[in-house]
Length: 305
Image (cartoon, rainbow, N blue to C red):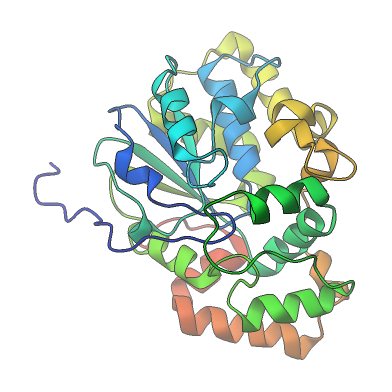
């Protein structure tokens, strides 16, 4: 029974060099829509690939980036993006990097949130940012409609990048703590599944079966080996152009730079113990001990498990 559930309500709009959250106000939801959410660099592209492989029986030729648009990215503008999304005839799987309170939330759609330790997020985010080319900056900063300051090139020192991100709560992107806590707060809704990047790394086959079950997607067992192959990091790295926006044109080195290493813990050789402890202290303060533990390592997904 869902009659007595208190569903999330949108209370704000978010705008910056990347975001235009108002697009969700105009989206006509379908009952079988799937929404993939992360902060950023937490396994979004991986989850898009997993869902595409489940829906299309292990097809390795899919142009997943086109099939699964980032809705709240303000490029292309919503006047262009919404008709494209409306014209899709397959089961839609849409991407967002918004916190829950900046989304129009559907009681019928299914939501999958992917969490990852913030230190691992930043190391992946730095690779994303430092390899961005002038086309990326021009698109984000010069396309009409930007609200707020432009995004600038990152410092050469990843340690400084980390300190700016932590003290600025996600600078120069958006709030990490707000994003994580907003999804953690609704983790027990019947149409929300929390998945952790580390759990996908530990047991991808088991996680994919759980995801399929949550989404009510019957697995074509005759194509199971193909599904697993096409969801592996090595295969995605080698075939990155189909998974990355514009085939990777915004990054020096192309799509394979966008799909970087897929590993955790690279921060351990750079951050001091004091810096790492400061992050852990903030995580517990901003998220609570239970969520902070989950974010650091994964399981359990829900409070009652």
